[in-house]
Image (cartoon, rainbow, N blue to C red):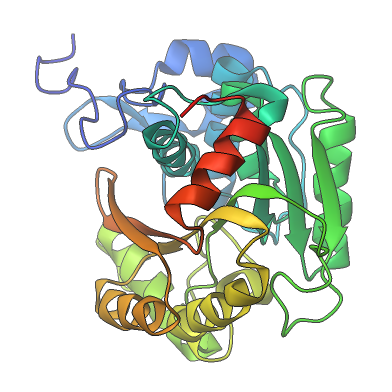
Length: 322
């Protein structure tokens, strides 16, 4: 029998996150029977998944999507990043709260909301959660044609996603919003999980640290347990430079979007991000803390809309009276 401590919720996760409770391995292995092969006893004598095994991690997240979100098809190439569902869901719930703050404390749902996911990836994970939880519409952009094709196949293979997600190829790797948005487009939210590392060497060191934390072993040639190909993990200048580029380009679309948002995974990058937003004269800037069981991160959100423009946006798009 599990102790009271082991039955506790993951209290750092958002209150609406269905992944707060400890994993129901009976339900998850029923959803994806192959997961049973990767359930073992941890050092406390409790059944758990082997988080150091990339296949086990993928099957666990596939089972979570099947059991909690009704996603029956979620297949993508093994070399692509496998996103941890609880953390991705937290981002969606927190930006839903951000919208509610501007909507009489009520989350706007359904076709009223259109989001742009910068770097949708082969797994299409943020749009999946945004559609199934809130009924929002999504544009998912990516610089990799294979990732776009994979994401589109996932959309086409799940009836709940069809007609809700449009996948677009970003043909210029230096652009973020340009070539994806037009001057007529209106986007209520953008979101992004930027590439984290500045080089292959940096990525390898990060993987070695993660594997050692999970297994207690030093590995010279580790396999990242959440996988990921180069453009998903590595960008020139790392996370910091990517976000700086995003901030500069967001100014060009200042009247096309209500809230721009991005994850800032490294605490050391936050100060420079906030300085850049101040210099570019964002009207409002918010920092939203995120937390999972083993790491902390944050969302930074900004808007260029004045109070009057925000009111007009809510009235015309969300049918919210002032």
